[in-house]
Length: 299
Image 1 (cartoon, rainbow, N blue to C red):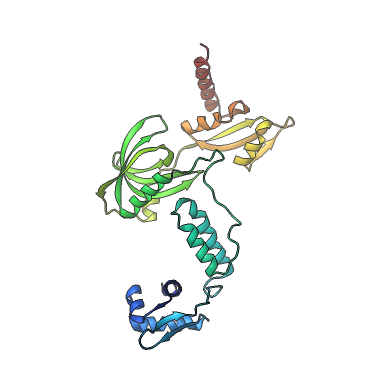
Image 2 (cartoon, rainbow, N blue to C red):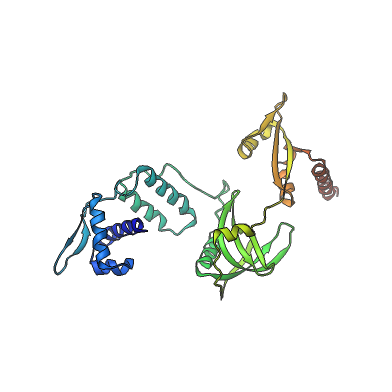
């Protein structure tokens, strides 16, 4: 806690140029004596901080000083900048400005060795408006209302208490307490429509440990798939491990998939390049679905 305050004092002075001891004491909610002890500690690690008496005086840091490696190791600096760079896509526009400021403080010239982009090659952008409304609702502890399209094709009106935004398996999800189901649920952001932040607030404050106990593990089933060799690029993109190949170049994968509609829509996304080998029950279900699709094109 004290180390965090020392860094915040340094950053505050770098931003504002100068501050009085009473001003810093009020801002960081400590005594003036504690502020002077903090200044001694900051000075002892080589940061040129000093105090001047009289009118116009105060505590300040030399104008040409940068943080460099005084408070963070090189690895910690890189981790901080990389994490911030990954967050830019989901935060406000001034994140880029903050990234530039931090790289300047750390005297790091290049921060563009990595780029995080959640949009696909068709240039569809993330659900930014939805994301921002939910984010604000989480901060303000306000109930939100929306229409949701379930995996079964149903459209339902939901009022929920938002808890956190989760990025998993290439998609954003909202984890919240659903007032309709009176239970905790995940909602995929792309299926949320007509989103509205309500005036109703809530005081519920769940800790991560309490949240984890409420998450229901999705049922999965082990599926063995056979792929034609022309689908190799996608197979290696999406499975990476446990891929075997026969003498004809066909690829085989054993994978756990959600035991619901997601399984069938995912397998069908490979078109005629895939065949379900096991289990037999899934194979039979695929046959029925394909026959039903054929019926639609016979007339």
